[in-house]
Length: 74
Ligand SMILES: [Zn+2]
Image (cartoon, rainbow, N blue to C red; front, side, top):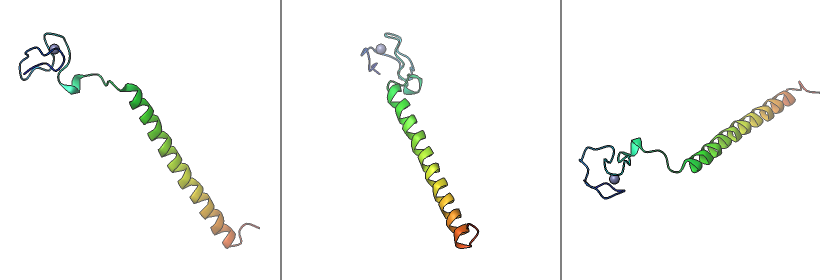
């Protein structure tokens, strides 16, 4: 097959191009969009934190409403 980077001929099962040194197997290549990955990871964490905060607020409000309904809070 041909190397996608230098168009040189490499064995079909080659993981690395012997001509230009680029990794042909994507599993061995470094992630190119590292920044985007970082930001999406931060966004994912923020969303999960907001989700749990939301759940906590609902739980506190529900508990407060339950106690108030039963006259436990004067
Ligand atoms: Zn190459």
